[in-house]
Length: 131
Image 1 (tube, rainbow, N blue to C red):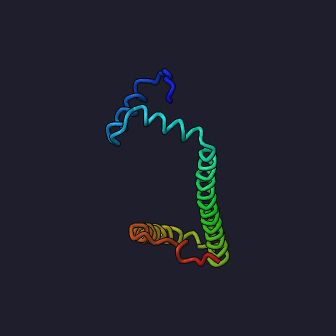
Image 2: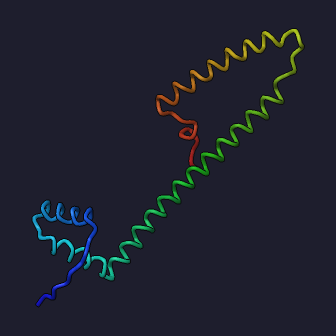
Image 3: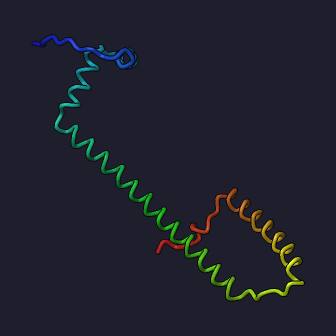
């Protein structure tokens, strides 16, 4: 035996229920009954918790990859700066203009090489072993 119960839904939710009922070939009552049964099921909380746990695990792995990437980027920059500061001798004033022009040329070449590398999907991080 079934008992009757009147419930009220917002118009947009009622439309979704009706559309799903037509799509699945079921009555609106069957759709609502299945939704309520799923909500009341003791397994429902476990399934939601498992879904949250999977999502949190995935987010944790993404954060770990981001931390690794940031660490490698920072170390790469620090190593380059240390190398550049210890190897590059100071220039006399008369050589500054030509050195700046050459620096602009080299920088443009660097930007172009970086652009090609990014377009190909290559990354320094891909070249570094995970271990």
